[in-house]
Length: 572
Image 1 (tube, rainbow, N blue to C red):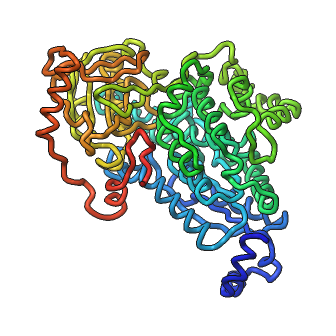
Image 2: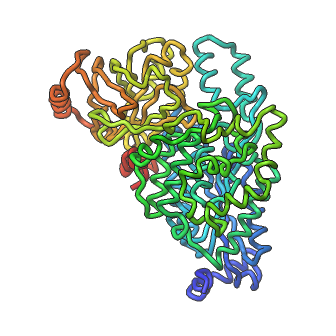
Image 3: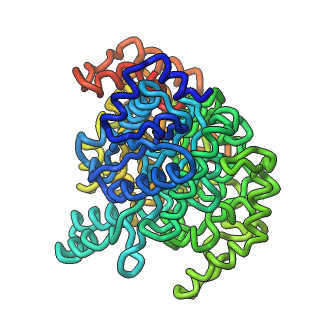
């Protein structure tokens, strides 16, 4: 018997309450489908999801199910940038997942369609899918097009720093701001939103070829209808989410992450998602699997093209086809077929040739966007996990975006206890070549782990600093960030990690090839490991925790109970 029907017999009030919403007696007997989206007039990545959710609901109804629309509106990382609103961003992921759990468990459903498109909403719904463990189909919310001259939103941070330094006029800056987001959908670069849409498909939870479709396109609307149809089928036939998504599925996703040079925030989200599926995935797994992996995607912020071109070049299936030899082809997917069977079917259907027609007006070919396996952009993945006495549990760097000069360096420490202090120093030319800017007390337990986006943009857009300093933080970065940035330092400062003990003038060694991040000198003088350790122990004895920034509400709950950045920063 379907779970929904079992619950009807236990809870006799359910039938009359649903009839009160307009359900018919026949509807009560059907498989019941939860259609959960993050729709809301909150930002372009969610404002268009209502029509897609309605399309999924209608398709489920036409295929024997009865769907109910639920909503867990998300916030926008971009709108929360640069002020205290950013402290709520990571916490919102876990709160959305909790709300979806409540929706799914308080009223029993037999299958679900889940629609989202942005930074925290996609991982939130993927976490919820693993937690509630019912047959589920994910619909990526698609991507917006680029503006004039292929302008995309991640360039605004650069233009903001240039304006504040007096390098462009107010008129120029205003033009860029008004033309960077021409439509709904995720921002058109390989930031966290685009990366997580790709991860949903790479895990096998989204239908093949549906990640990063143009928002508002007929193809995306069709994907939503197909998801509703498939959910109605899965309500009767299964499998449940955890039966389908396994350790091998997550390993495939990590390999795809390497191929696309995905956002560093994925090292927060994918381990948190895996945890809900009963799979242990660590930052060290990313580091190991990225070594020797092919990096293929020539898309911003590290590459040349906007993210809308990914779908035109064949999307996630084309990426997976290129790295086919590195994937587990026997994993099951939401189609009811294996990954290998899906890829074979697409190749035989003419899918790739049809998609590539959209590149012709730009004078591009598939290989210009998704490079062939034998001609990669890089051969060592995109991210690395650094460890040492500054980050015993690890720190994350997107080495594919770091200038080569900064892959090995010894720098003088300039510690700041907030991003506001650090960015002021950068913009006022108080940071000099050869320095390491440390931003601390911005981890999950410090302030909720906001992004250091504006600081990274101020550094990467400054020719004097971009290849001569590093930014090191227990906070995180935007998926749009590029340049010499190392984040997720664990343990974080608020927990008494070594980053809290660094003083002005200490020497910091960065060695990305050797995966090292350590304090190698005290007060400007190089010291042995034993001498550094002794100095840190002495400082640790004098260190006292800072009072909590958040005294009440959801941020107090999150900062008191968040896991370390290296483990995913989830609400524990």
